[in-house]
Length: 173
Image 1: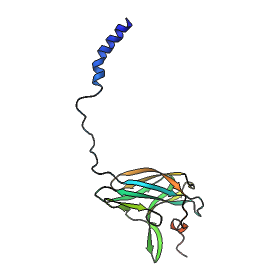
Image 2 (image 1 turned 180 degrees about the vertical axis):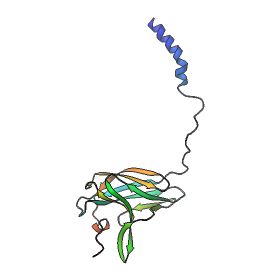
Image 3 (image 1 turned 90 degrees about the horizontal axis):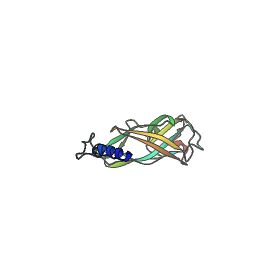
Image 4 (image 1 turned 120 degrees about the vertical axis):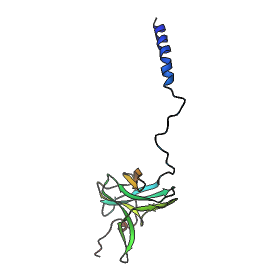
């Protein structure tokens, strides 16, 4: 008797089960597909602060590639590991090379790439919550002029180049 009831229940439910498996017509797309991919981020790393005179600041470096046909700017960056995050450049000022905030962001030309590297454009992480050792990871969010963002976990690496590149000294010397 149980077998007959189970069989009857399956026969009654079969049309409903089969109709839930799919339909002959696909549902229309609810969002247009982007015509070009966004900015590609590669080779990101943050300089360790261990051994530095000032362990409250460091810099992040990376490569940005723009496969699109329109220039895009890196407009800002944020990180919970730092109280202040700024886009910086190295520039000649008064006959001296100085580090300063880069007004207007960092351009990634259409069909090309931009490298944020030691001695050039970079992302400054200041008022760090704690010192950073090689092997640590720093969360970093990049924001671009095309309204896209990239959430990264950036590895911390040792770096031994001259301290003054990323730890500015007073200009009164």
